[in-house]
Length: 222
Ligand code: DX5
Ligand code: ZN
Image (cartoon, rainbow, N blue to C red; front, side, top):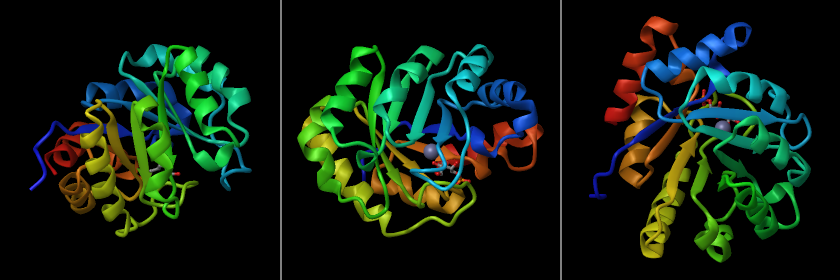
């Protein structure tokens, strides 16, 4: 059995009502979301376009919780300062998005933000090994990035287990986050495999604001 550790829920605002984005951020904060997960897509690295830094900046005043900004953009380095300035707390990126993973991590750190590395379903675990000492978060994609509402790819549970071992061996405090297709069943599986932060879009926002607190409470129980 894995050690029991507190589980954080990071609602992805991709599944919120974009016409009421500020209110949605405030509502999901009040409902108990631990991080506000912000999915940034560029229509190039992934086949969808979402939120620029001006929107992140405008949303900042609706929640004091950490903004967990997931950059699905390429190139990534030219845009990191703008998202840092907009109020991101954690900035995560994909190693395939630029040629210099270590440089991007240092850039995020130099701006006073927490760096995260994101592994696509086909990205090998070993990509974290040379940089694990420099990371505050590792994000395992359990869907191919680009859209909410996709089905969880079960093979990623082995990757979560492998990363849990590496993080524990490092002795560092690193969030192990999983993103995509999280529902009550896959939440339980991901927690059992060693994840301690669950991104949940559909599962957090389903049913409308009166259901958010219950949605989050049930996910956290695993
Ligand atoms: C997918 C995004 C996810 C997505 C998750 O590219 O990174 O954060 O919003 O949505 P659900 O929870 O609906 O799979
Ligand atoms: Zn995401």
